Image (cartoon, rainbow, N blue to C red; front, side, top):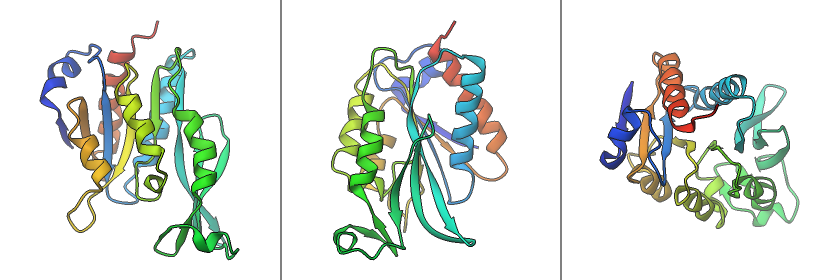
Length: 209
């Protein structure tokens, strides 16, 4: 498994102590490798081990009808769902939405569900964001909310796409270059090892009783 880290944060991560402001774990890898599954398993493990932990954020999931993918939705950690993008909407309003391939991105639906989940609260222990991708970044408020998290003492665990045509999205470049960033690159052979490694580093930072 490939892992890289901002040099300023490397020693504190390896020693299992709080790295301070802007601690950021990024999971990347090709589509279908299991990034979302890994994040969901990490979330379940943390909640099982630390029932009082306060985690905020969201997952992205495919919407399928009859075996065909027709869109994507975002799901909060308490199970609320909202549309992210769809290929099956033909309303006049949808024609004005931005598109990624055949999918129209419903920015209003995304923002109404996700932005409240990214607000920093006194009892927040961890933010989970799946993912920082092209569709999500059509929201002009999404990445500024991430930057506010990085300016806080609350750790961030996020998935990011692999570079397309060798070029990362500008927002992903900023996250990868953040001095508090640790990057885990998944493939099908290292998923279990990656989960254990991310989990151990998160537990070392969270210090939950």
